[in-house]
Amino acid sequence: MVVDAETGGTGRPGQRRRTRKAIVEATAELLRTGSTPTIAEIADAAEVSRRTVYLYFPTLEQLLIDATLGALSQAEVDEVIETPEIAGDAGARVEAMARALQSMSPEAERLGRSLIRLTVDAPPNADGEVSPRRGYRRVEWIEKALAPLREQIDPDRFQRLVFALAMVVGWEALIVQRDICGLTAEQGQDLSAWAARALLQATLSDVTSS
Image (cartoon, rainbow, N blue to C red; front, top):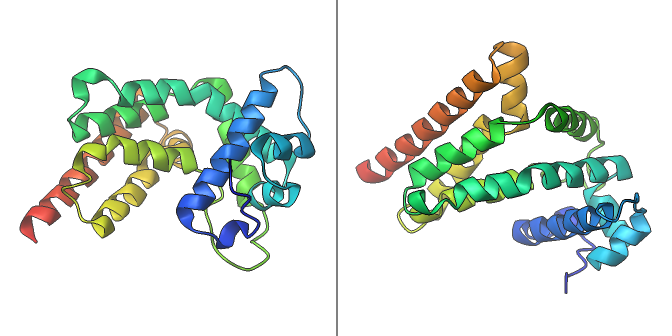
């Protein structure tokens, strides 16, 4: 059973991520029935309160977009990361993840831009705490891709690498590639893959020299 995180943004990061994931997955499951769920229906399905849903998603529109994006990308990214041939190669897993994340359909890109608009314009938390507004799936994928190296990198460096990789893959990176750099989809994939490998290599070099 999902713990009802009434404190929302004030709980532990792992618990916050699990609660957000439960809400999004419940929404996606309801959307598969062909109808648009209400906040009350989503809260019941996720086993949380309506207040908790609103702590993570200030509007129903933002939640529906997030759930739809997950349905469009989850299986594909999971599949490339878990390819048996690269199971023990963190570099290959990271590159495959980067390319998959930057390979978005026009519909997914449109929804991603809408999600960024909604989350950027959202007001700060009532308690003033800074907490992630999107990207929890991205962080999970990065951590999964880096799994072969988790025992080789100390926790602080591992987290720093995860956060650094989150800056070079995903919606924000895609918008920079398209709107600022004028890159094609293929060029954007190549750039994100190169940047991801460079960050990984820099971290491993840092570990070796310390």
